[in-house]
Amino acid sequence: MQTQLLNTTQAAQFLGLSKAFLERDRWAGAKVPFIKIGDRAVRYRLEDLNAYIESRARKSTSDSGKR
Picture 1: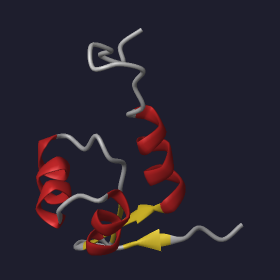
Picture 2: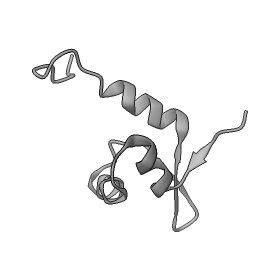
Picture 3: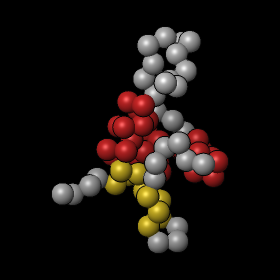
Picture 4: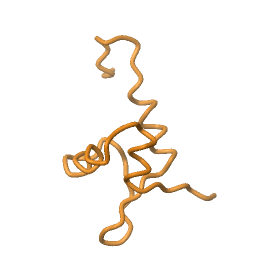
């Protein structure tokens, strides 16, 4: 199985977010899962990004997503 890995810029583009958002997210506790390769390389798995999108789906503005 081959996993597609995206860098921060590509992941931000895919999610429609800024690169800075993902950088802050990693610093603050990572709601968006990421992979650390070596000391500096950060990558995002495409399937993790899709799962993150699905986890953010709500039925109304008052739906907090907590169950």
